[in-house]
Image (cartoon, rainbow, N blue to C red):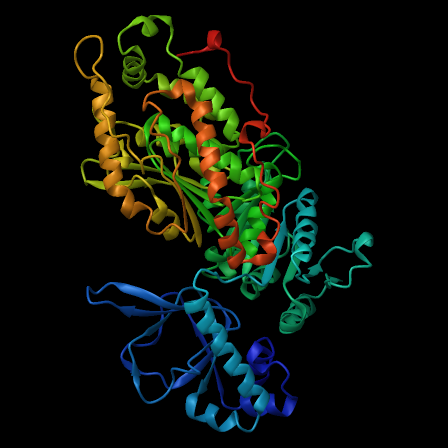
Length: 629
């Protein structure tokens, strides 16, 4: 047991630089603690009498507010210590609970007080760890834990370049990542951070990994690069030792991946939170296979391509993995606003052109109608052109009074919008999108917002844009669904709840023109305009709540754009571009405060004339004669 404790101590930063005799003496007073998710290590309002050193896993320190709601005040993960400042005889209000499977070392506080004067290096290390905890949880509250030990399992040789690309990019950011691999690649012989693992002996294989983890403080992030066919005993131990797992595969590997993950997780319990799927997508294909059984075994997924396609996937897909490794998650909240919401496409285009990679999108109404297609791989400018063409009223409606408005009613009532969307999204599901995207709708039965994160992508859009008055509620699963803008017009909180630590909100209803549309030739106000104006006014009331969690707010002035003028989508998108460019310096500055090396080059050259910014290529825009509406 003592040798195991010594081995674990050498893997923790608080014991780096100590002589062997110091480690042995401290180890005599250490107790090994292992706990399961939700297990309580310290009850609130009782004295904390021990110091804990986190070897692996995640814990949280919580407190109940006056309403009885649990608030998370502290988050602890690998290499943290708990209690160096708080421990003593006085009761503390925080409780300490495991979030995942955890391995810790426990040292009685009184014994620590007698040991730290004897070993000054130990005292300095503990104090530095305490300061790091304080900064992480209070001063730098937006930073997220970074996985420092990352296991990468490859289902085929085709995914092997991922490790090399990740390490190269991290090196550009000033890191010195190391790689342990089960392959002896000749071209990497000159890489001092690359080592080959022993293949035959399981015990030696794991001991080599432990040795490398123990030296992490001096040598940086560690990638362990292995074949997914690794035997379950070694694979499960590797998963246990890692902060994060990337299971790399492409279409056709789903069945074997399910079998291997089940076998590995049977040995390594509660490993789901660690595991990420990384889909390697074929050139020109932005949608991953639908694999529900596989999704149940992992916490999140990434879709990457090694090609240089000009789409939201393309060059930026690997950067989303880098964001994850650096503890960054950028969210974009797109609000409702009918045709004015086409300004979102201009914002998306500017962010993409200036190197700001979005990790997650949440959209309400028009925000869903722009966000979901973009997340599927359709370029922003391309989608603006599609909307302008496909929603152009045919000749008959153009001659009718208020024909453009009645055409929208016709599209709603006859389900033609469904037909239009499926030309480009087909039967794609939200789970398959290259960029995670959420659509917000309202359930009239419960009166609460519904956040769609899975299921048919087209249906998710239709639910979110289902304007009351223009169409009947969509009845599905015991719910009556209408436009989500009634209760959550700008869903920034949706992104914060899902782990985004930087959120950009785009509101196209922040401003409202101070005149009501003039009467039509028939001597009455348009019904469609009245409904949309009412929703616009209501949206202004809920916007103040929706944007509160956002770090940056972009508010295109689209007050001169008609709410039903979808044929002007390209021009409205340009208004969004100008508004995004105006906010870009502030966004850049805030991102650099989060991670300067990662965002140092963002928006170095900002185009001064958005009209000359290059359009993105993609699926050809159908001609008016080819419309199916």
